[in-house]
Amino acid sequence: MRKLHTFHGGIHPDEHKLMSSTPPSARAPLPPRLILPLQQHIGVRAKTVVQAGDKVLKGQLLASSVGMLSAAIHAPTSGTVVSIEFQAVAHPSGLPELCILLKPDGEDRWIEHSGFDYRALPREELLTRLRDAGIVGLGGATFPTHVKLNNAQGIQTLILNGAECEPWITTDDRLMRERAAEIVQGIEVLRYLAQPAETLIGIEDNKPEAIAAMQQACNGSGIEVVVIPTLYPSGGEKQLIKILTGKEVPSGGRPLNIGVACSNVATACAIHRLVNHGEPMISRLITVTGNVKSPQNFEALIGTPIDELVQLAGGALPDSNGFIVGGPMMGLEVTNAQLPVVKGSNCIIVKSGKLFPAPPPALPCIRCTRCVQVCPAELQPQDLYWFAKAKNLGKAQSFHLFDCIECGACSYVCPSNIPLVQYYRFAKSQIWANERDKEAADLARERHEFQLMRIERDKQDKAEKLAQKEKAALAAKAAAAAKTQGEPDAGTGADAAAIDALRAQVREIARPVSEQPPEKSA
Ligand code: SF4
Ligand code: SF4
Image (cartoon, rainbow, N blue to C red; front, top):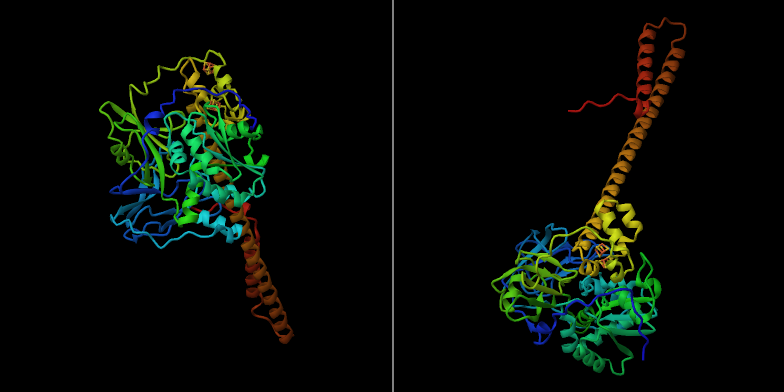
């Protein structure tokens, strides 16, 4: 039996999983419209390859990946591209995102597609196919899978994350119960790409049916299902690696640095759909729960508005007051029911004052260190809070702000009800904004210096040409003088004046830019 390790801290919030994990998942019908953000992944926004008015087929490429860190977007069904415009999306920044609006035609007609023998493909070609199919991590981070696997060849451990530790969310639980064999087929593709010495699936012990299903599907495959204790946030990448291997991902490092690659079970299932059916990532399983009549999991097309799915779960009850996209610990609170679900959306929770009472007003920090005791990243949350509040961003960074996984465990236990994670998110966004500003300023300075250098070079070129012209004029003058030797030269004074003027022109042009008078603005 595998020896399990522990990570620092962790909490046991109420699970609230049973109501949505009990009924089988259902396929959501076609919604009347789909909103497809071009930025659904970590990295560069995808580039549209369609225009408003285009008719598209299900699975057709709508936006291609740009550069290395990007992921393609495909049509979740057949229909017409209505427009490409900025729309509200569920994002912590609150900023709108460029989206493709698609009106389904109701026919759900596929583009020509088929599975393929991945073992017959060179590794690079298979990675390219993952990229072109828009496969990203479905555990929440939406990191493009082809990038993660690019340097993963020959690793020690491949870990499949089936922990699903956050309260209310049950998509991975239902997926493992219902599609265990498909998940294993996807894992085989990951194994082919990473060639790991061992492959482990970590599942929390509060999912006995999922554990049984995966154990059966993995039988004889060499993949080990490891049951881990239920403790939030054991599904965090670094925490799961620690539990299963005892290894620690270094601060600022990646799992690959210690010979480990992690992927979500839902991502493995999406890879199976691509390899065995030729289907790009156009749908996902999503939990709809909270203050609804019938919580359940739905296979929903990417781009489906929240409201459509809430209706399928029996609709929001009368005392509802908003939604959480994601889980209650790490998710995002929104009020707009028309926001679309994206590749990273694993859960929609309908809120009510009863289920999620408004927190009491925050009180001063009493330095009780409860937040320190539960922090899985072994940080000093109370110090990070002070630095973030005082906008002392340098100090926050030196206290490893970016090792914070925003799990919310510190806020959960804080007796002063301080919304600690909000302060950390704010500090991180400020640091990113400052870095962007600095990069923009550096670029502007470099451009200005290059422009000055170019003007200077042009001046010198012109001066050289005029000097040559002057030399030629003097030579011509000397030749003419030699020809008319002994004769009075009526034009000598005028020629000398012309040459003097030419020399003055050369001096003026050759003068450095810094010594020239400023240009008058128009
Ligand atoms: S738990 Fe809250 S009150 Fe206690 S030290 Fe942390 S921030 Fe301060
Ligand atoms: S949110 Fe960050 S600081 Fe707070 S417990 Fe989680 S990792 Fe630690």
